[in-house]
Figure 1 (cartoon, rainbow, N blue to C red):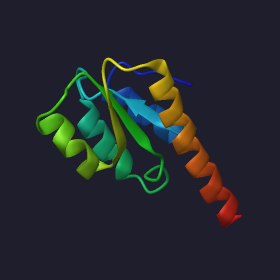
Figure 2 (figure 1 turned 60 degrees about the horizontal axis):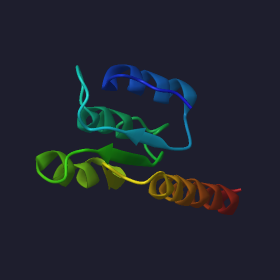
Figure 3 (figure 1 turned 45 degrees about the vertical axis):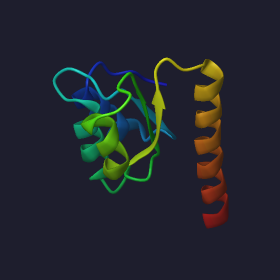
Figure 4 (figure 1 turned 60 degrees about the vertical axis):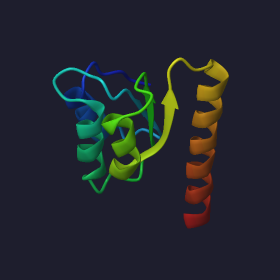
Length: 103
């Protein structure tokens, strides 16, 4: 697991690490989560990594645009840890199933 305080280092870390899943906030300084997600999805090597948006935005252009940019899901704050855990477990299980079928 790794953290980044804005979109720029997040992109660098995703490209270096190739995580199984990305959790991202939309409201970040310097580069917001929407732009970071666009740039991650533009890289062929990491574009298939699911991105889960965890945000305090309940509606509006930020959340409306997220699925079109590549968000797998949006989880609205405040949320229960069990909701976050279930969402992560589901996406990692889907990725593992895809890898097993491909191999």
